[in-house]
Image (tube, helix red, strand yellow):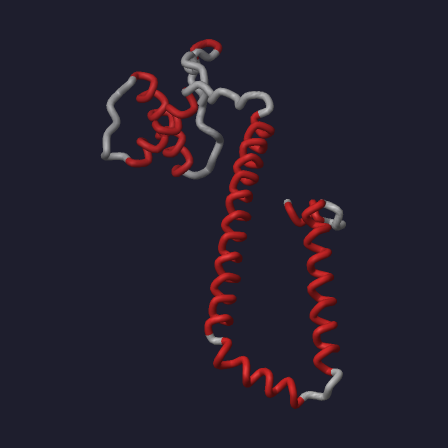
Length: 170
């Protein structure tokens, strides 16, 4: 089948011959395809009696239709820019929501700690008094080191000085 409407115009007006095949089924399929092409060219109404013929007619119609318009130059770049802009806008909103939720969690935790301090603080104080004298100061020093390290890392990340910060942001 050809895309042109003058697909029947062959040299000498001859029709194509079916492919050389030993099977009668291949000859029947060839005849069905030719009939579908002819029916489609004539604009004959489609019948539901022969579904295989209807399939070949749809195929013939699709092959006669003009090809789709090509996509414009730079289409992939335009789509990539739009996707990147949408992702960046969504990331900003997510970051603010995460900060808001973290702040809410910190406030809720602080209020629970402060509200029940009269009940649990004497127990913690008694447990700390039973520990050896130097262990509390070493624990406080370890906690201060962790906070200082995490704080420094957060500052470096915020300033863009941490190696690999741009790779994680993407």
